[in-house]
Amino acid sequence: MRIAEQMTIFQKLNILTDAAKYDVACTSSGVDRRNDGTGMGNCVKEGICHSFSADGRCISLLKILFTNECIYDCKYCINRASNDVPRASFTPDEVCTLTMEFYRRNYIEGLFLSSGILKSPNDTMELIYATLYKLRTECNFQGYIHVKAIPGASQELIQRVGFLADRMSVNLELPTAESLRMLAPHKNRKNILTPMRLVQNKMQENKQEIVEYRNAPRFVPAGQSTQMIIGATPETDYQIIRVAESLYKKFDLKRVFYSAFVHVNEDLNLPVRTDEGPPLLREHRLYQADWLLRYYGFEARELLSEENPNFNVLLDPKCNWALKHLEAFPVEINRADYDTLLRVPGIGYKSAGRIVKARRMAVLGFEDLKKIGVVLKRALYFITCNGKMMYPTKIEEDYITRNLLDVKEKLPAHIGQMTYKQLSLFDDVNFRMEQFTVTDRRGKTAIEKIVG
Image (cartoon, rainbow, N blue to C red; front, side, top):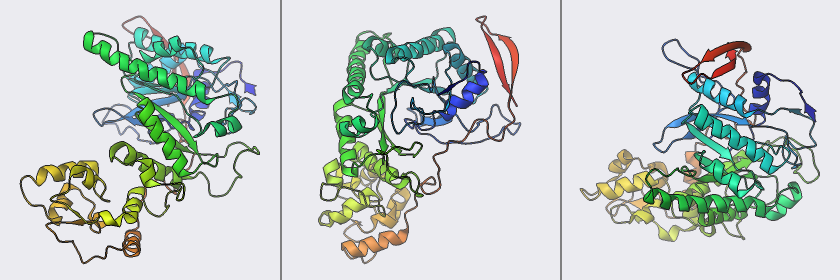
């Protein structure tokens, strides 16, 4: 382990944004949008990730680790204790300075703060609490904060942090307890699920407190999430979505994130390294299935089974389900209820709602569906309008499958193109650090400045 005794805040930022790139418990992407001289601020590549606010806006977050020093030796983690990598730790003051200075430059609207385990879970959680407390009270930062709860930390500390953060997450790490014992022997499922239950219970209590006392502080108002690594262990897709379904039902999670396993360490218990890279298409299919669980009323047992435990890589899970249940089709658009419409490939929950509203005023045809937003190139095999199909179509699995494959589903741009390397705040930019002193209205000073 290499620990630098003295580092500038710039050097720490370089190390700890890079160390955070494998944590995907927020919707993350890299973008490099330069200032053209007509507006305020830049959007620079690494360390900046994206999430979405309640009103649908995409917001930029500073994504960092508090420290990449760690007492644990998880076999899949680049920051494991036995790895010889550069180590760094921020102080609470440094995280506050970075957050406020990036915010003032319009780079970010919030903070995503995770951490390795420094000394002990309680010590690490104390430092995170001190950081958030200073950021909220002394710096008066009112932007979005997503923070990781450290399994094994005291309930009191997690509750105190929860009143300062907008969202908290506790990483499940791996789908099953057996896999956790094999690859992360210092962690256990009980220590992970305990803070999840604590956050859930406290959120429910807090909702009642807010009803009774209008000015009561809010506890984790944006809810909690978790993350699972996919492909490091032999679980099937069926096992994984069963775990996700259980978490949604038992812990009221807002989101389960799936992280394709990236081969950064060599270990006998890890999969053999191949030229194929991370299983990104599998990750994509799991996200599609997760969407069906959360918004479309599907259950895991409908999508997969022990006899058919993995998703079809050629078809999305909804199309695959429809092909296995052709007895339920075609669906008459002008009579089917909302839940039935949701199960038709090419009809999303928004377009299903629009169909229900629009048909109160008129009988809908295929041209109307196109305007509403239905993807007819998928839906046409499964629907009728006023008793007629769009084209003469056989309701046969092989026929429909061939035609759906001819459509050549357009996968997201990152599938087959994205690499696991996160873009850098410092790539292609000649930054240097300069000393400066700025006094704000509260008499606070910032010590260092990033200059282009």
